[in-house]
Length: 622
Image (cartoon, rainbow, N blue to C red):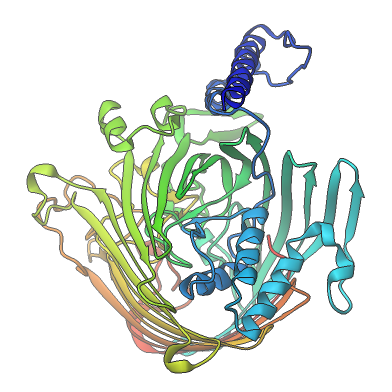
């Protein structure tokens, strides 16, 4: 024991010395005294961002003692393996899955799949699905272990590691009928590639790119909100078509045996729900980030520092006109170059599994801008609510407490409660500053003995003014897409789904939902009655501060029933067919009927039914 302690202490001292030398190199630009030159410098012209990143990395180095960590690449958040892990956890074949903090790494996912396989309590169909995913996440076993013919993909292996290149392709067709004079067709065609690899046991990486062209029969693209795809970065509107693309690039490495680091362009999702969560969801495009991950027994911790893009201030994006930094803009070569305001996201989440049947999570997320990164928010252990007060109460901090319970074999129940803001002296009043929301859900596997069937029910209520802020730069959005729940403020939804797997690669789903939303109202004089129903419209002088009423304003109600057919081949080719029928009351009418359209650009409200037929053929995941 004494020798082990002595060795650990020596490694810590060596690492501390290297960190000090690294800090001197960053400052003085000279090699480390140990002879190992670390090319990590900050040029003179930069850079608060770079220096603060170095501080964050060096803080992680100080708590690490050896190279031994989870360095595998991340599994995309929309990978179907997460649905299987939810089912396995509810059935007790895996525990402490940590699926309240996604994405998981390939290594963590593989470990959970092996845990389920070794449990000896899997049905035949569940075992087949587990084995299929296990093979796909075990690169060392190679394509020879996959049954049948597999689509070709490039793969190179050497003593230092491996790398593979594969195609990304997707074709989406949507047909809408009802509540419009003619049927509306929308086509989205995507093409790209993904590169993934591992360098020994020290570095994992995943890079992907996807170019998309969207078009519709008789569909015109004039403003950004005309684009049907909700997850969009910069778009090029070309009359009858719209072009946009997205890329991700993340590298994973370890700083000792305590801290894992993910750096690059990606996204995270925090919370117990499988799709939309109140805190952080995966509705937005990816963003530049540094994610620190650590685990101590049954306790898991993550800290996120990210740079966001503000809502676009462009003539074709009326949602956010006038929000650019005009003082920093200038004219060159006869053209105006508008500089964006700085915008950042920071968050940390603590999740514990004291027993096999319960997970408890707590998280804070803050959005801030109009200045560089704040040291207080880069501190993983700082209480953000206190830090915001220290910094002058000018940022947008949100706290969430959630719990995930498996009270009985085959059952999973989860709940989340979010506080966006509160007025301490009027905490029980209807003041607009008291912003609370909650989410309740349950998963019942094999109900009433129906094998390979999952029933999920959920209710979510998002109070007025949630995600908004008096300073537009602090709105809880990336570009113009919500970072949290897609419903937006002043909304609620009941949802029920029944999923059954008939074969390991064939499933059907039946869905029902009832959604209500209270939108702001456009008055006859052209002004807006702001009831807190629009993510992009925070409180302004003249808006009512003393009274907040849920579902105030223009209330739209949607009752939707849908059925899906889901078929997967070779673990990478997936076809989803969907039919939906919706009955709407006072809902926005086409052509500008989607979420996020500014009130003056809406094309009216009305009642009626709508049907949607959709096909999604996909090879690979972004």
